Length: 145
Image 1 (tube, rainbow, N blue to C red):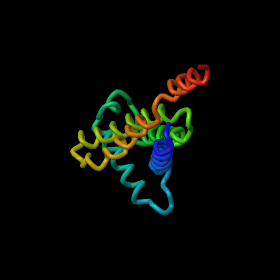
Image 2: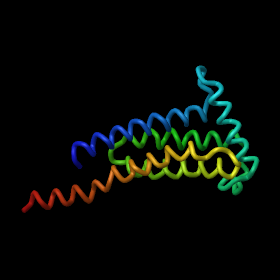
Image 3: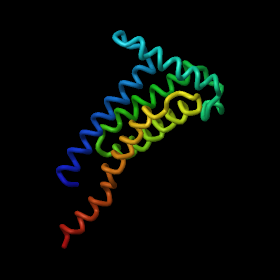
């Protein structure tokens, strides 16, 4: 991995980690400084659960349960994206979480275009993180020769 690629990868990982941890914490609890943001999350998740939009149509979860599960996943993968060995895996799951949020917004007739930025950024991070194992094996073979 070149120096520039490493800088871009870490910059994106830090930005995405901070974004998804912020979103997850807001899903889990109302931050004292931003109650209106939490109210928007509550309204959106409750509407998705009430409309039985996929995948929530397959469960009997309440809005609070769905917010708790989503919040835990967002915080978990937001933190995991900062672990060098797990960056690619976490970025993949962040793409899935972000794309499902955009799909749910589209299904409810809400504006979905602003929500597609985070999964696109996670997809770019997925590509930038690359397959380090393959590169490590190739570097080891070069050293042996």
